[in-house]
Length: 259
Ligand SMILES: Nc1ncnc2c1ncn2[C@@H]1O[C@H](COP(=O)(O)OP(=O)(O)O)[C@@H](O)[C@H]1O
Ligand SMILES: [Mg+2]
Image (cartoon, rainbow, N blue to C red; front, top):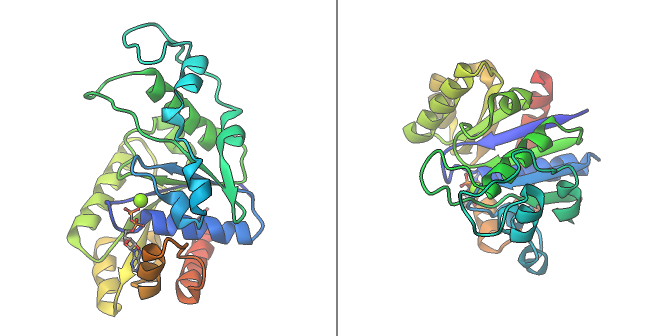
């Protein structure tokens, strides 16, 4: 079984929480899981339960100046010079990921694009790496992304098995869902699903189902004080939180059903 899953949604809805729980669940089921932190505001390793010492060793790929220079043939810090548009990336995931609790994490980092349309060596390397991860033959790839899918190329987006947009019972996160769905429609991708998070009661579920077709909704995760507490104590929401774990398990079963 190969699964490439991309998690997106408005900031703060619970993308990282859900990505971490899904990754831990797949690892527990025996899959080899690569969790990709593709959000510039990177904190997936923390939600996966990585200890501080290991987190402090993580260097985002975009910050590896020598690697970027070596692979793209560019000079660090220089702009406007020539560099390779198809750098080699195949060995990067294994070499630069960190593993804990059976989950490998790869932190992409961020690129100061300095306005739209900028093409810099870091950007080219991250883009190549992203398509390699999605098109490659890894077991399970869970990608914790920032809101939106516009930075994925059409071919890459088409190879994602499922885009999961995390929403909460509010108009703003549903607006983000509609935006993502529209972008996906435009490039011919129809595998866009929803997970409703921070649910308090039936009314919250009904609200979400008013805006999302039932067959696109993979399930709901209730608002959990244990999730809040785990964030406060730098622990993984996956540990010691049986109810949320059960809900994520249910969602993963529904996901398998649509793949
Ligand atoms: N089901 C939930 N119940 C309670 N709090 C949650 C839940 N899911 C996420 N949170 C909290 O919401 C905040 C944002 O979650 P996070 O996963 O970092 O969102 P994102 O990655 O989308 O920005 C965190 O403080 C997290 O602990
Ligand atoms: Mg996040």
